[in-house]
Length: 126
Image 1 (cartoon, one colour):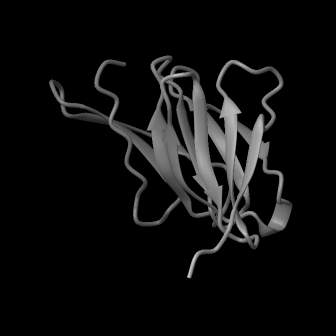
Image 2: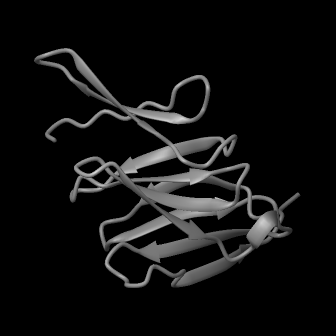
């Protein structure tokens, strides 16, 4: 899907693909109710990574199949993931904001099974 555009709807439970040439929209129902999916990243494999801030997970959407893969996070129910980003070395990074101090968690996209490779505490600076 060249030019995949991802938008989380106001309801917070759908993702959409917009094909500009045909103006067609394909939606996938995020299967984690009221989880507040956010901060999507479209990898070069065309899989879409995102976090569920209220349900303490990272997830991957495969737009080709419509399948979702959920990854539970190290801090569990206190995770509150936020602000996903990717680097040039194949890692996905985000903050766990529900733990103190906050933590930066990294996953390597090619690791199987997916498990955090880095967990870094971020001290609070006043």
